[in-house]
Length: 504
Image (tube, rainbow, N blue to C red):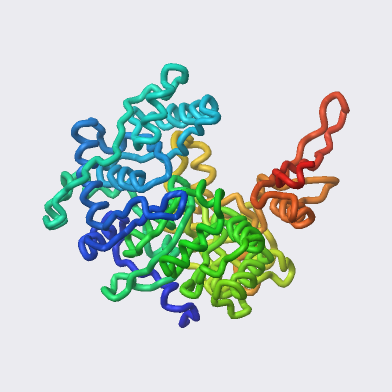
């Protein structure tokens, strides 16, 4: 059967690993800019070419194996403030066969708690080395007398490998063959790619994209760094803290650099709409270059938020809105499946029975089943059940948790169809061949015998107090009555952040 999906929906790489495709791209366009990093004011703070990334990561990989004495499969903590140095370190770990463990840098305003979490991760993964940039390095040096940082060997990698001779062929700057050939990050690009644009290696085509997603979070790492490096994009990235301080900096960067696509969870689009509506002047923002707006991934898409964004910026900032909101690609993914799983190529398509749910795709390039979680049998069409996935992009398991890994990553149906599945923990259903995600099963709230998805409660509460609640700053859950009350019933709790003007 011939697929109705456009060409950009097809897998574009014939390589089986990230490193193979990354090397191929770096050799083809080594002098082109890969990453432009913006400071908090939106000015360029750094530019990295493909050649610089590949050269510096090769130098650092050799340094990790030599001076730092790391062996393949050793773990290294990556603790960087937002910036380009993180990506150099991550690629170096891949090329050296070292397992990179990205972490949020500890918050100086709550350093004790941040270091407790950092120490827990260090102990759990068994890392003996910590890699950091100058910001975290200075913080550690200034606070280590009063605060206990993880007892590992720390290294400041800022500037490591700079000044390499980029006129040399890239093949001359590879690290040792063991590190180069080791497939420590075996990403099946064909099954995991979320790229909406087809073959981007044509010399006349340079795709520009803008992102503020956290670089050490799975979506930010895959969607805005590792994937674009393979595809030959020019990424314009900046810190999520800069976005929160000035949400319209995101739209102004898209306008200035004529970006073709960008991505964010729903609250990012919502925050931009609200800030733009209250701004004195947004006439400098021109979004006519945009052809794709990705949303969702780890969070459920809210159609009303996306429609409001599209309608407002179409009127005021030349966003190309055709009325069907076809620029949006609601998608679904999870870290256990190398983030990307599927996306809806036809814009915002809502369910007939649940108009508050947006389709996450059809004609999926993976094998999936909707399963009754208790009986492990395939649910009938249209019946909600747990989403199970089977593809080459499924991760190996959770580090140091063999029992949980077996239960989650090696599930089998009843009756057994001979395949091994990943249990996503998300409830979903199929309608007209399209996938709709309801919510997390473990976050289900049961009140008076009725089931409620926490997402539904959070969205309803936000919409009821739209002028008071900060976008994305709400959580709904249930608690069991206290022993003193002799009450075993579940009670609904909603915790939220309110705007300053609503606090009184």
